[in-house]
Length: 269
Image (cartoon, rainbow, N blue to C red; front, side, top):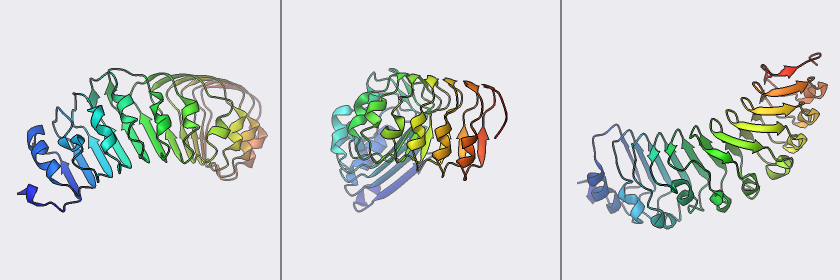
């Protein structure tokens, strides 16, 4: 009966007992399908929309679907219209699941939250996602260094959240030039070390900045005072030293400032 709805453009299936086989039979018949949401469904394989039959697909949301088998990477490039992919609470046993996602070069919104990957390094394939506006990779236990130079190529990026992983290394000194139009930046809950670059002051559109729960050292850059639209700033639980620069008073929009659990001293501006 569902298969007769050939003009269907959106479908949501939430907390259902439907299995892989039934979805594989039904979803490919919807040639005009643009939006798919599957939530809390006990699947083992990705549904058959990954076989390329739904070339008009724009949004794909998969949450808590217990997907344990591989992403069919050879099929992903057929999603020429896919702009939003949201995958959360999912298990991937494939070694290169993250790499295969990078073939979706038309993506504008990519969110991967609380997933488990067999290979926990982040592939530099995100460099190819030139249309990304929002990149969220949260709570996945991903290790290694973050490919900052790749992000520098994402000139439309407005929000970047890579919190609660195990990324390490330094924040590049040129971060302000890399992400000059960024509005939201969150790298909390990782293992980044070294000093906080003064080039953050060049990110004039920044409104929320969270650097908390890392291993950052050195002083707080006075250039933060140049970010006039900054209303949320969290640098707590690091290894910062020195004083609180009076230039922070230049953050005229600041509403939330968290500096606890560092080794700061001196007067509060």
